[in-house]
Length: 98
Image (cartoon, rainbow, N blue to C red; front, side):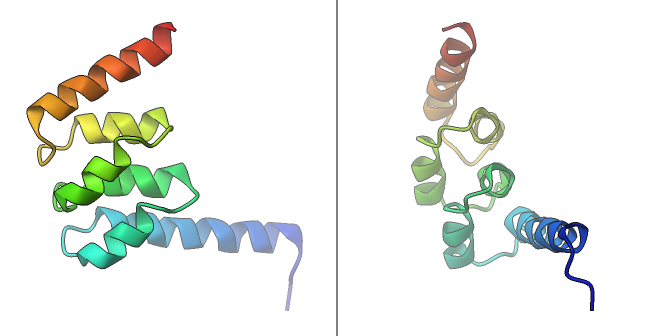
């Protein structure tokens, strides 16, 4: 069995790819999406934020995520109320210019 750095890195990336796939799936259960919304990797949280079937309470919780990619995914999610998406758009623009 090989346990060198390339093998471990590949295994970690495969794990994240699986999480992202689950987070994007419209049939993923809400409790799983809630857990994935707290993942350390921003791309997993971004996938949850962009899933139109993510429950509103999870989307609202993600509005305070510090990663701009997560914020951008929320802005494009039609399940998030329009006024919240507008507010996020203003915050993201301020972060870029600030």
